[in-house]
Length: 369
Image (cartoon, rainbow, N blue to C red; front, side, top):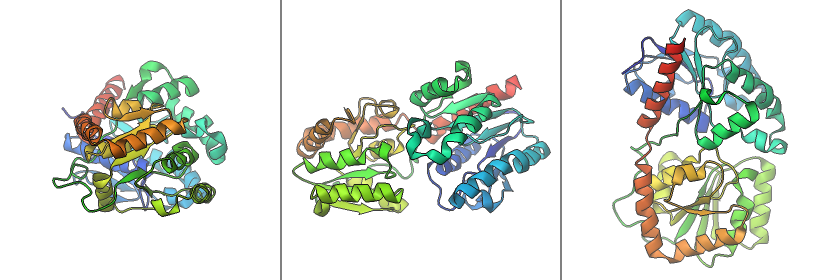
C-alpha cells in the first residue's frame, strides 16, 4: 500500500558518472515508484531517473560529486538553502535522503540513508572528510526521524560512532538489477583461460596488496582487475605486481562498461573481495546472481551478504586467501556447489524488497509526523 501524500527524494548525489551512492538513488527511486509511491525527485540528472511518473525538480549542476571539494561544499550549502525552499514549496509527506546529506531542522519528517562510515575507520586515507563525518553527518542524523543503513555492520558503526538511539536505526539490505545480473545458459568462460575477478576502487581498505601477494602463490589463472583510485594507491599496487613478477598474469583496466562487467562476472572462475571493510559489498551479490563463486572476508558486512554461499577468509591472512584461490581453481565440485548456493542466496535480494522495506520505514516516519 502506497503512502498518503508524495515522497520527496534528495538525489543530488547523482553526477555525470554515478557511483555506488548515485546508483542506489536511481534504483530505489525506480523501485518505489513501481510500488505505487508518488515521488518528487531533486536531482541535476533527470535523464537518469527511471520513474516516468515522478515529478523531477532540477538542482544545479554545480552540486555534482565530480566537482570535487567545491562541488561537495556547494551541495551542502544547496541542501540547507535550495532544497529547503523546494521542500517548503512542495510539502511532501516525508523526505528521503539517498545519502547522509539532509536538512537541519527540516520542515517535513525525513529519513536518511547511510551506507558506511569508511572515513571514520581509515582517517589518514580521508583527511578532507573528517569534519563532514564527525560533525555534519551526525547533525543530519539527529534531525532525521529514521536512519536507514545497508547492513547490521553499518548499524553497529552508527551506534558506536554517533550514539544514535538504537530504535531509530533500521537495516535495509541492498538489492541488485535482476534484469542484468543472471547466469548465462551456455558453458561459462569457454575457450578462455580461467581467471579470478576483482571489481572495485583501488583503496587500502580493499586489501589489494595482500590480494596480489596471495594470487602470486597460486600456480594458475589470470587476475582480472577492474577499478581505479587515488594515483598513490594505483602506483603502489602496480609496484607490488611488478615486484611479485605477476605482470603477465594480471589484466588491469580502470573501468568496464555495464555490459562488459556482466560478461566478466559470468565467465569468471571466482570473484575475489577480500576487503578489510565494506558497508555492504555489492560486487559479491552481483557475482552470486551471475552464478560466480565468491571468496570474501569474514569481516564487516560481507558475511551478511554471502551467508554460507562463499568461501570466507581472514583478510589479514595471505596464506588463507591463497589457499582459497588455489582450491577454487582446482576443485570443480566446490565451484559447482558455490555456484548453486550463490544463486539461491542472490534470490533473497532484490530492489523490490529493498524498496518495500524503505517504504515501511517512511510509513512510520509519516505516521509519527
